[in-house]
Length: 312
Image (tube, rainbow, N blue to C red; front, side, top):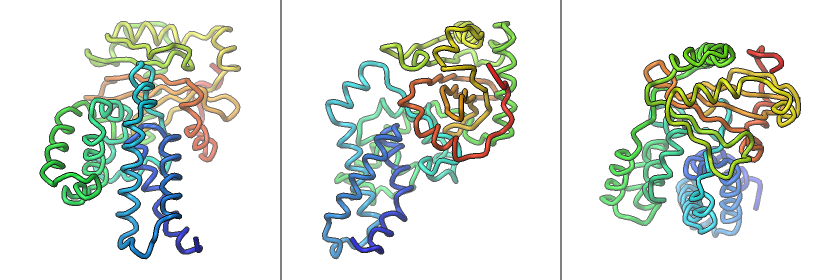
């Protein structure tokens, strides 16, 4: 390909990656999908591609749907150990964030809820809510009717009902929320943590680095508080598992306040707080290295704040 043709693709890369990430919930899979699209672009007879952006959108969407439908992906997600890959604020893969719908579509809560949708419903929801495509355009991309696109969108919106209101969090607000959370979790008093949680709060953990075969779930504020109180209590065994004594930083991850546990400029864990009505409605704790690779890369590119806890 000539330089201009490569440049045309590269100009769309971040948008295509953010589309693939929303469809797949995995930064690694999104990157692979975009690379596959580049190979298609390379092999295409580009004289017949009237609108490159539309052509590339269609290719990436359908490549992502093929991944979602694959037996391997269905097996991985069926065993109960899958969760979305977190992304740090500022990562271009998060994509457009001008509207409430765009910000909500990339939260870990919505990415998880989208697992309940069929691949086509998921694609319609993302193309419509996050990228503002018309139903006529979506119908052409997916090879369905315009009426079918409208029906899929209606069903998807009905099933995705727990976006919360934590998507307008700026860094200063996130730090205040995380400071209060860390202070309560470090106090050893579960009642302080319970007071920060909604009555229907839920907690999800990948088992301190993905050691558990399935995600660990906590279904009441009291159970979440007890788990967090135990988790925040340092011990030699925990430090050995982490590889040392991490620092704890406040951050914004997928539009929500979060705690980053960092060691030697590497993220070894993250806890994302989902906010609803000024309380914490969900806590997602992630420590599996394969889920933290891209977040670590973005963390290393950014300036760091003063940690909330210098050495845990």
